[in-house]
Length: 294
Image (cartoon, rainbow, N blue to C red):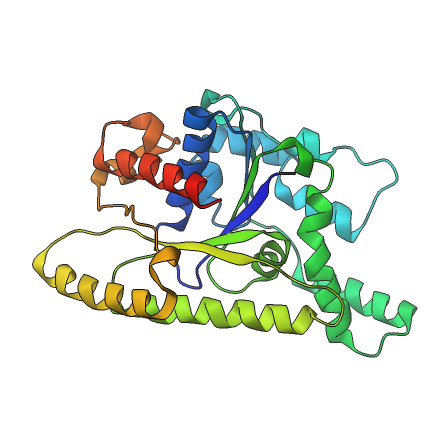
């Protein structure tokens, strides 16, 4: 069984998806790993970083997105039209070993989830609704991945910003999480907030199950090196090293690189679109560092 890793941050705009798709691509292309990327964000940025909008539209029309797998957990069918193997897009960007479960702009209906869990609580005679909710979020992603978990060396979950149901389920299912952050003062707040959320998640589930997710490390992204950001950078780095220690901060950092943004227009990661760019080289180094940490 391989590793399940969540890339998460309470704050958006920190390069989380870019980190996910480029590290996943490097793991498959450069290291021969079997990698599955799961897009848990309704912005579908990871999906559109690995396939074109036309391809996504066709798969959505066929019901081959993550939405279908969630629906199967909430309202199981005796004869489902698709299995998880049908939903998985193989060899995205023509990279052998790199697969993806495309996201969806509408992943689940919160009212339907609440109604389902209320019915379960009534059926089981469970008065504590929080227990039912916790149980659901803990097993949701785990159940979806169960048929394929042994088929991959890495399953990387690209979480949405904030603290959504799917983010909590990903954190409960994962072995590790990576926290991308920009080298600016507000990043410290985002890092601390996620740490508190994970601690709360572990506490809320401890009566029924142990959630053993560990931080793999903090990755600093979009470092520009100008005078103003350089001053902030030193302040942030000193604080992060003080709070977490050297071992929890990736030495490799992702610089500000326009080629990374341009690669989005080609619907492929920059490590494929422009492998000699500074951003691409940093993702290669980050991936090597990731493997050394495991």
